[in-house]
Length: 346
Ligand code: 5AD
Ligand code: FES
Image (cartoon, rainbow, N blue to C red):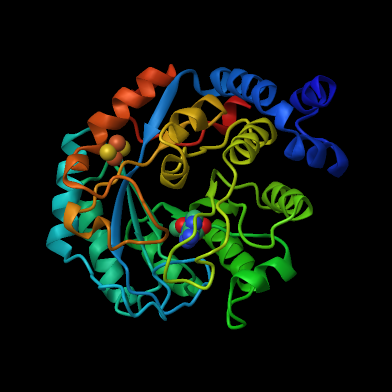
């Protein structure tokens, strides 16, 4: 194991068999984290970047089998934040030191280019020094371009799985991996800083799927890579599927850090939901971003991608303070910074 990790650290790559062996080795978890933390400190020091997450809408036209806001979930109360609510979230976030706002939502047809561009332009005008990240699913290249021109500079779109057959197990036939990849290429071509990623332990996932995820990411070369464990949601077809594994997720974070030394890697909310200490462990495994929830507390539980999501109660109104303490306890430091990718260092 140590030999594989040393080889990965110097070559920044391994043959498929080596990656697969590390993915499957419980014993590799700690040494991988130590190696990843070393690389992360070389590139980013102990800095942890904040991304203020604003959950814009839980309406969605899609029907992904894993996701609690899928269109067939009739039990869910749907909401959309008003523009005034979003701007109030940004104001609060800016005052708390956030320099990146992430607008995330389902694929909600209400958000025409005109409406979404209007919102982006208003945020851009109010916060010229902040990054605006969109995470609003698949749209046309023209739409992505219009949003970029309105002031958005980053886009998060996880590929979810890079294996065609596995993609078809997680999504209805109207969604395809090929189209998802096309969207990612379009976003890059337009000039966005792009984030992709996948769920760990989603139903039907194998080690070979995970190796393919890493290979696809090498091809895409994104700036940000978000991964988190799959967590079942009661009103989905996967309600009774097992959760993703904690140490497997941590090993993958470490592998991502070693394969992509410059990448911005979040310790995700799903990881914090799987384990009370999950985000801290994610940071120690190589992650360098946290995404505190900035949404109005009243809607947070309705953005129900999976069950038992953290940060939904009144006590979490200030995730910023909570996360700052958690980051410090894990041995890192929250910074007030737009947090761009540091490619020049690598
Ligand atoms: N468990 C974990 N992550 C999920 N996501 C959606 N549903 C789930 C779930 N049940 C993730 C997807 C999506 C991101 C916004 O949330 O990877 O891209
Ligand atoms: Fe939200 Fe701790 S980060 S309550």
